[in-house]
Length: 108
Image (cartoon, rainbow, N blue to C red):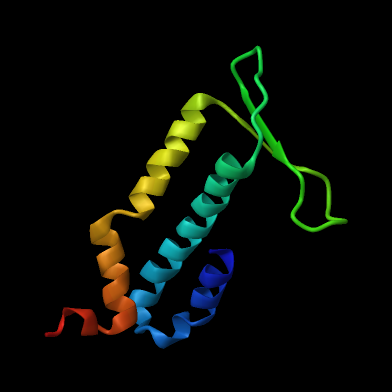
């Protein structure tokens, strides 16, 4: 997903200037919450006695940097889930689709 978002960001110049900011904002938000989603899904989450969450995973590349870690609370995780749902709202996705297709998806 990260490569797709990066490619889309490079192509923003194709959009009308008035719509560019909307698409850019959506792509930045999608990238940020997608990275959080990956942390939640791919990390291992050992039990913590103090109620905080701590997740970790090894880097994807063999000699990569230190393990990837995520810390937070259940409330923060719920907030992130709400942000993910908001990014994926149908009416918002339809607006972005309309921008990138020039409205062609509405024809016929």
